[in-house]
Length: 172
Image (cartoon, rainbow, N blue to C red):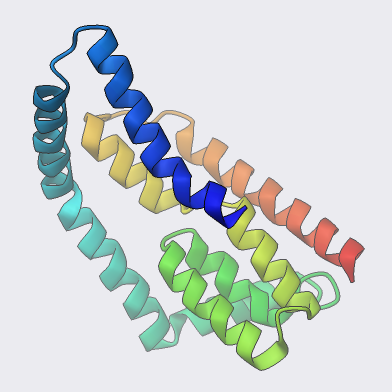
């Protein structure tokens, strides 16, 4: 399985190049054009990425994240969602890497096989960084009116969390 996983990227790259050559496309020129557009997109979204990273860092360092988590913990019973998992859920809305850092702390303190560890692992793999994704993708294609995207994304996030809670309790 590891060998298969390691071969996927080279195989897809070779398949794309072969398909381009078979159809008569200028493969190298297309690659260069795509790389240039990718760099322009990266430069355009860089301020948003920096802002999100700073905002997430400020939430953690200021203690506001702890206050928000405590507020949510008052509403959500600890038997349903362990208090250690709530900061992961809140941070995951903005930053997947920061949520992964919190998850590693949970794994170290409570263990990956604990209810909190299992729930955290499922939440990280079944939810999306809503605000990060919206800002990056909408900025890169120039979307101005998001309409129902935020509500739909938050509903999808809530559904992923609910499913994670259900499956984690089922595995415990």
